Image 1 (cartoon, rainbow, N blue to C red):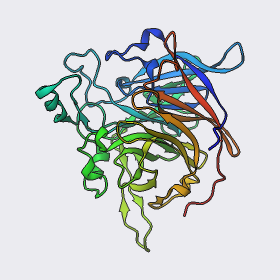
Image 2 (cartoon, rainbow, N blue to C red; image 1 turned 60 degrees about the horizontal axis):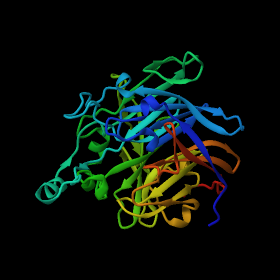
Image 3 (cartoon, rainbow, N blue to C red; image 1 turned 120 degrees about the horizontal axis):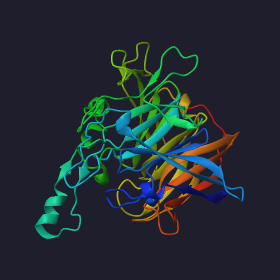
Image 4 (cartoon, rainbow, N blue to C red; image 1 turned 90 degrees about the horizontal axis):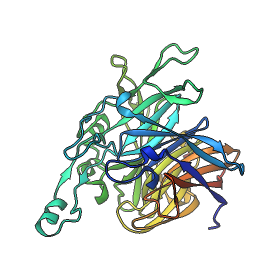
Length: 391
């Protein structure tokens, strides 16, 4: 396919905040992004922080992002694990893989995945034992929203509590209830015939792994799964969450009506299966009433990465099976075994059938990383297919 026009955009981070306790750097790659009101919000999958950059114009008049601010999730939410793990100075990571904005809230999703220790440079019996060690712990079981208010400088800022003008009730930071090994979402899915068996399987082994989040008004969320991929079909889980009336710092799953007769059954989630040629979902983003889907390999190794379109996805009110013809490809991106993985997408602007989409990379290669503590994202000018009603 013809490659749409694109350009690099510099993301300048604070050099003092660039180095992580693990030895990795923020400028080495991000796992998810959300852009709105001139701010770019980013997360790295090995922290419990949200990073904020502000849009600026360079001397040449091109777009760039800087003025790095950091928010510690422990200031806003009750995390399952806050004390540093043995041998570390940092709190257990949330494996943050999804960011979205809707209704004055920044939404966040952890991977909800199990983790295999792996050999990690060991050999022989020690390496074999590492391959057998699977854990489900830390802060990965996190699905939350945090209010966005105007900061002292007028720019968007996160707040534990915000009272919008004219609103009857304040916006409050809240999360689905959960702990170190599960939350309300995984409890709802544990008996599911498609997804339940994959909850204990590590993410890199085609196990359950949330890697994309899209938020629509009213608490309607789409969760893109990197795995499992079932017989070549990827899955998006749709849920609806609302504040718990008795506990304002908690969210709860709201039952969804299902099509099927005069008295439809109620469920707490819907599953949509997508024919992506064996790929999984790496990120999601809403543009108008359409859903943009970044795809990539579900497990380690080489593969292809594509940006696909689910036209008029927000019109969907029942579970769907979408073949590849219903998911047109907008963009093809390279995917390498160990470097430069397209990992996050966000829409910067949309006018009619065209959209400016930013793509962010994890494990960025040397050509993408810029001193000091900066990296290039790419912005693509895409022509979106006309929306049409979902059937």
